[in-house]
Length: 407
Image (cartoon, rainbow, N blue to C red; front, side, top):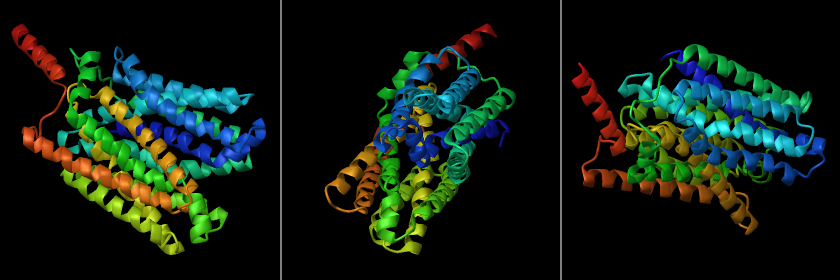
């Protein structure tokens, strides 16, 4: 794999750390600013909404810029946002820093997926995408626990300063290792938007919302579930989340490897197994060992869907995939927000702390139904192996013809 993927993975590591580390530092942040925990929770909500909005916005703004330069601009935005969070004198500026950093998130992963796929042979594209996302998964194993520890022992501002420093390393890596890859000639914003007329692109995004939403329905409430139902001590939750992160790392790599061989079968297996495991979690949550194993499996099966779904979007939006790729990253966060809300609804309704697992199982099962529907439509239309964005394809063909005439 090209060294450029390492630079992308470092950037992904920093982004993954800043996204999730705040969850373990909310009490410290709330105490310093004199706000309630629910108010401090806006730092999580604001970031998620910033990703959903920033993914398409930053990608559109970058349509006139080469992909490498746009990745550098996004890392600069990420650094600025985390530095603002680290030095913010009041809560409002801290929230603003979180939003600024989040604007880089979706576009970085969206554009980075396109760049990663372009760096390798066609039969290795999903593997390259998974290598970039490895930075995000490793962040949950290393970056988040260490960042939480540093924040609790030394100060949460130090954590965000360190994350900003990681951004500097990522920026330097992109500048040094990622080749200058200009946008394809003849592709305009209208070609990027044309991808959303393709039903297969929309189906892939819906699978992203529902499939990964199923994961977060359970994981969002893992702390009360494990302490009140399984009987773990409060301090054990951190290590359970590390298990979840290890599962994510393994699932991401396996998903990338097998998606290059058989993308849709990989989705059938991972989504189907995810629905079953989430349903079983309502039972295994009552036993410490079984619960720990199940948490690792949820991480593995959930992230096994990420490389194939991201590659599915790239394939179907071929010719002008950047905006669709970025919006699909926003779809992950939309799924997270939706599932967390639904999980809270069933708990508030009195169904218990394991009830979100049933919500997650239903969401994952719905994603599996969409996967079968997508494949059936592809067979009916005879478009298996073809891609969307017809206008972009037309433009590419026109460029080829002009080049032929020139020669």
